[in-house]
Amino acid sequence: MSGSAAAWHPWPEEYAARYRAAGWWRGETFGSVLRERAAAHPDRIALVDPAGGADGGRRTWTYAELDARADRMAAGFAARGIAPGDKVVVQLPNTAEFFEVVFALFRIGALPVFALPAHRRTEISYFCSFTGAAAYVIPSVHGGHDYRELAAAVRAEVPGLREVFVADGDPGAFTALADVPVPVPVGALPGALPGALHPVPAPEDLAFLQLSGGSTGVPKLIPRTHDDYIYSLWASNEICGVDADSVYLVALPAAHNFPLSSPGSLGTLYAGGRVVLAPQPVPDVAFPLIESEGVTITGLVPPLALLWTEAAAHTDRDLSSLEVLLVGGAKFSEEAARRVRPGLGCTLQQVFGMAEGLVNYTRLDDPEETVVTTQGRPISPDDEIRIVDDEDREVPPGEPGHLLTRGPYTIRGYWNAPEHNARSFTSDGFYRTGDIVRTTPTGHLVVEGRAKDQINRGGEKIAAEEVENHILAHPAVHDANVVGEPDPYLGERTCAYVILREGAEALRPAAVKKFVRERGLAAYKVPDRVEFVSAFPKTGVGKVSKRDLRTAAAPLPRPATPALTPTPPPQH
Ligand code: OOB
Image 1 (cartoon, rainbow, N blue to C red):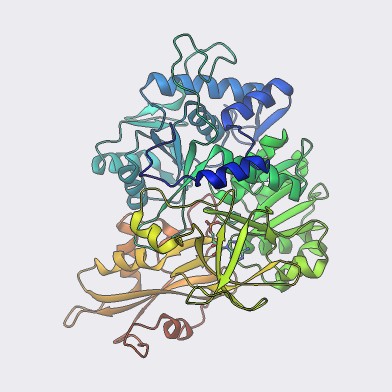
Image 2: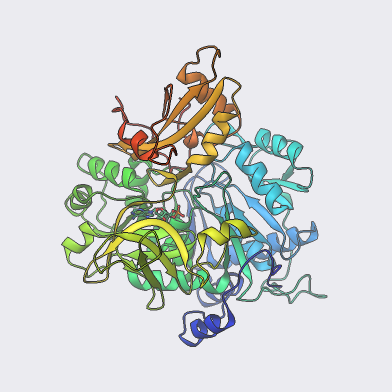
């Protein structure tokens, strides 16, 4: 049941054997871990959903409840024909149902495909068609957006999508998630039902498909196994001090790799701790939750970390339970990093991670200078790091270069993408991260820049080519280039440089943005700025020089909208 060999690249047996022998891969699955935790401490609270109750109030699920719910949901999914290996696109906000659904899918060996609430028709249709998804799980309305309309549009484009499940409210034309669960004896799944509904997923099987930020026309999918992902969880727990007494606040969108696994919600559940779900990452929502739930640890992207640090000076909420703030997803400036401890009264850990695998953390006992000036060092002694020049030759120690990596939780290939894989991985299995880094004498990494054609908009990744393709679809557009330019709040925002067709009627920037949005693209990918030009700067060999375009950037009069938040930013 390891999935089609052609679709993904398992670790070569020699490496798998090494990672097992080293004790990194423990032979566990998500289904078995939850079962064990529920047996060990059934009455401990696993999840707090502050607005998930029937009356809109606080709802909690114990480990036993989450386990039993996952069983019933798994049996219900199976009864509706969702089989091991099937893909299910999950686009849920930070609610308890997210965990009920994904653990149910883990248990039957179906693979969640983790979409973000901000994704729209173009992205979701692509995920559904590319993976041949059997089902799609949505909220009814969230952040002012009606996901049932989105699902109807997706279904019209992807007829193979058999089922749409709506997690709350009126399901409209679709199936209410609440109608899916079927009663099963407690502890019956996986595999032990009379006549075994389905085989038990194996630790080396794929657990889910995560999304890559990407630098290509369409996003790539990242196949992660139970073994490799669970290793990144427990090892992150050790590094970040997460244990059964920890209370982790999911402030960023739950499906993103950072709040999911660094150490995130899944790490916390692995440790037997408590996960609190913030419907929004803003201080007005998060601070009262920190106070009332006794939150000890959370993770934020740099713009939110800045916002929290500033807001902490004016709050009358008691934030003293907060011990650790993880900041990552984009470069956290040294100046901002220095303000965290005095502002929020907690320890900062920088995280430089990627959904493809490798995660680096500054350590809790690192000197303050290391914490504020580096992006951490790898989780594992078996994480292999190479820093190379453009010709793949190792650079001298301390010099910046391209970061390549291989290890026990870094994928060996994207899912079903042979051409990309040839470019993104070396022949000996190193992943080309697209990041430019240098190492310090202590083995910490400092992120110096990026070689990939991607904009990092406050942690939200935008592939320039994807947006360019959408702009190029406009009949008045002759050519387009999308680049990142500095933004004081987001770090980077997007600017589209557009050449109009000869004789085409003049366009306003707003019309280009509207056109992109109406093509069904997530709002964070709509360019922050559109500039019309008559030609692009060229390099010596006549290629468009994105570097020169970037330096041509004009200052933005107002800070742009934060990106990696559960609600899409307002329409421009
Ligand atoms: C996290 O994962 P992704 O897959 O959304 O993005 C990965 C990319 C990295 O290759 C790098 O370009 C950038 O995001 N990045 C950082 C960074 N953390 C991520 N660049 C500079 N400094 C940092 N601290 O973003 C992610 C996954 C797990 C944990 C944390 C972040």
